[in-house]
Image (cartoon, one colour):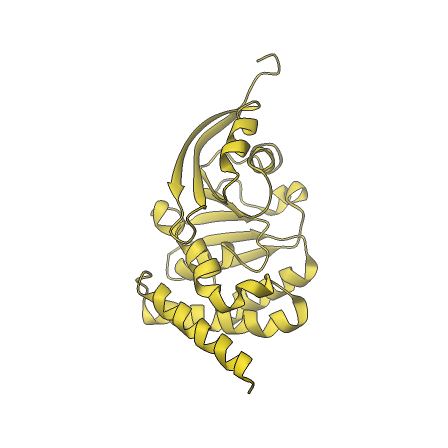
Length: 224
C-alpha cells in the first residue's frame, strides 16, 4: 500500500467520523451507508461515478450534503430524484427511508452505467428505491401519479428544474434543490417565468451552498 493510498484512507476515515457526529442514525442505517460508500469506491475505479477530487471527503461532500434534505420533509414517503448520478441525493434518501412503511424513492438517471450502479446498490442494500434509466423529459409514464417531494443536485439551473418538474413530470408537490453560489442569478432568471413561493436554507456542508425549498411554483402568463 502506497503512502498516498494510506493518506487517502486516513482522510476518508476522518471525514466519516466527523459526519457521524452530525448524523444521528441507527447501526443498521450506518451499515448501509458504509456498504454504499464501499460499493461506490469500487465502481469508481471503472465508471468514474463522482469527481475524483471528492473521494477523500465523500461523507461530507456527498452523504451529508444529500442527507440534510431528509429532515426538512419529515412526513415524505414518496420522493422523485431527478438526475440521480451516483445516488445523490436519491440513494441517501432511500437509505434513510429504508425502515419507513410504504416508502418509495424514484431515481431518474439517463446514463446507463450509473443506472446500473444504482440498481446494484438498491438490490444489495434492500432499499425502497426504483431506478428509471430515462431522461427526465421521458420519465413521467414510469413514475407514480403523485409524490411528496422532488429533488435534484447539480443537474440544471433552477428554471430548467422547474420546467422538468411541472411540465414534464407534472408534479405540483414541494421540491428541494441543492444549489451553489449562483443561486441568486438563477432565482432572478426563474422569476421571469415562474411565480415561486420558496425558502432558502443554508447548506451545512458548504458555505456557498444553499437548499432551495420550492413550496409552490406556477408558470407566469406569457404577457407578464
